Structure formats: C-alpha cells, structure tokens
Length: 153
Image 1 (cartoon, helix red, strand yellow):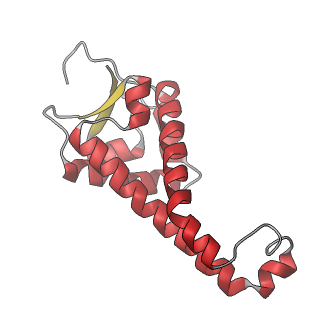
Image 2 (cartoon, helix red, strand yellow):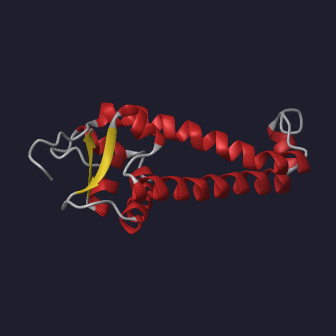
C-alpha cells in the first residue's frame, strides 16, 4: 500500500454500509413481492402471535425465502462491485475503496472471500465491524480474512 494512502475509519465506512444495505433491502423487496402476494402475506394475516402460529408454514416459507434472497443478492452485489472496481455504490458515494493489503488490484476471488468474512464479522453482534474503530490498521475481521484495506480516495 502506498505511504500516502489514508485508511478509512469506522465513521467513513458506516454510511457506505448503510447505503449499500438500503439498496439491498429495496432489491430484495422487489424480488420477494411476487412471493408475498402469492402467499397472501399482509399485516392482518400476521397481526398477532396466534396468527403467526396458525400460519407458521407460510410465515417460515416467506421468512426463509426473504433471507435466502437477501443473502444471494448481497453476495453478488458485494462480490461484483468489490471485485471489479473495489467500490460498491455506497463506497463510491462516500469516497472510499477496497484494495488488497499487498497491493495490486481487487479480484473477484478476494471480493468473495471478503463477503464470506462479512458473515463472520456479523455473527457475534457485529463485533467484526466494530473492530474497525479500534484496530490500528482500521480493518474489520472481514478485511483481515480477505487481506484488504478500505482507503479514502
């Protein structure tokens, strides 16, 4: 990494992450809406715990489908954007970029490994993301796993 490169900290990265997740939620909602309509998912059908228990099979089909779709879209989104340019839409807006720690350019393989690292960073109450605020290299666990830095552009 060139000496003049400035690593992006937690507060530069958090808004990018929020922007990206809003985009992913919108995409997921667009894709899941036909299933929601087909299963007759609405506020009145699941208004109480009793309603959820009575319609548990429908609730589980919808919930698990939404999670699977969100994970799939997220995987493609982060892998394609990070692998091609080092920037998602959120990172571009915030002026930060993912780069390999050893120099060179991002690859799809490294971007995919970084995405898998997101899961590891999320599992224990998002501690892997909070780690960025306290790490001397401003790396989250996913950055350490993939061998990446996020830098200001």
